[in-house]
Image (cartoon, rainbow, N blue to C red; front, side, top):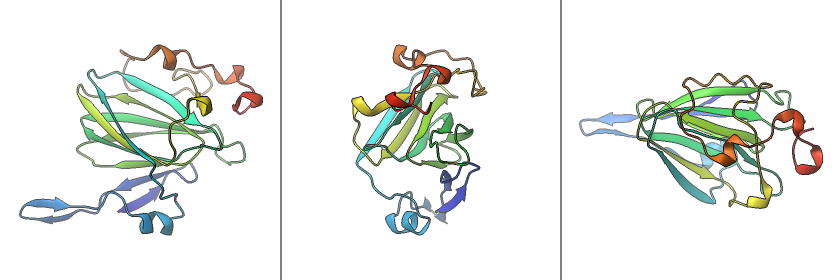
Length: 185
């Protein structure tokens, strides 16, 4: 695996180190020892998949707060997505900064998302499928979210949003959040 740190401290793009032969190729997608060597959390509690019928579908922006803050490994295995993460760690030098990365079946990239990063993505193709491994079990009482269209972040989604859940479209704007509720302000 080839680990490349993004501009957000602790978030990595992981590319496959393919070993090709006449049959195709073999590549490792996860290795606890390699993750530990890069000071990344190598714990997997759940593996999830999401499927999107239509391009333009948006899921996010979600995260969990301590004590069940989770790291995620996200990979698109069919089609393509535009994946966005926002640093929600108030002590971080990149607090409230975000990046977007295209993940696709063609580029085989994985995004490592540290704890306390809001995460969401938009399907760039019809029939896209995403798998992700998370370090903690889902705990509804600890879930938080941000609006995908919050003017504070100015996220440049590549497509018009065609499908989104009511829950995701109703997350609060950053200026409406308070520390007591697990939000940064």
